[in-house]
Length: 271
Image 1 (tube, rainbow, N blue to C red):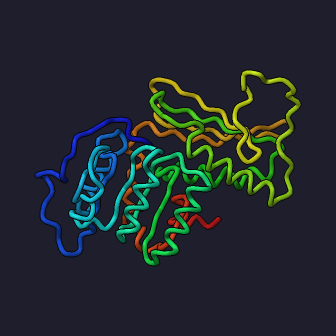
Image 2 (cartoon, one colour):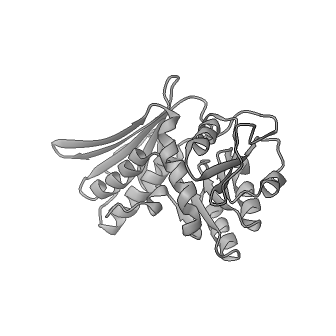
């Protein structure tokens, strides 16, 4: 979920109406990217939300303060997203982050920052699709019962990071569930792999990345036992599939102060 364009500054635009007193004031960073432009339209459509700023890569973050934004949606690029969040938190603005590339160190720094700014909430979501969130949780549940597990993620070739944030998050959940259940890492007798054909090893789980024109966002968790295989697959055919989660995050982030990693933190999954 990245913004690979270099847009020019632009305010919320003439279509933005005067906000009602109860409307939540929302700004979108990375507003000219594929995901960002969808988020702009989603915020405009959503009752009770008011789009007050659309920022591109060259725009000053001070525009967030000038616009009176209460929630920022960050859909930019990995190199700037943590700095964007830091600015927002230091100015008392909640953040909903869909930019991938976050690691444990970045999350820890953000959690420490939020501890100094009580009442501010940040959601870092590897995926905003409800189906993808469910597939991640189902994968973690199922992985305790299978000897082998591998993940294949498939995206468009303009995606700048690999493995995807969703795949890395799935691997983390799967790896943790298997360790807690006392399940050994998947068996693998590979001795030679000079070309990296076996994929990345994330939390003792092999993850394979495919980049292919025509794809949007797709993922499979492959689980195997002797004589059987279970496949848990999710497909996003259009970026609009992420907007339900974006709007949910915007509505809920103020009610969840501190750092939340994963949209499942805002859902009652009963797991």
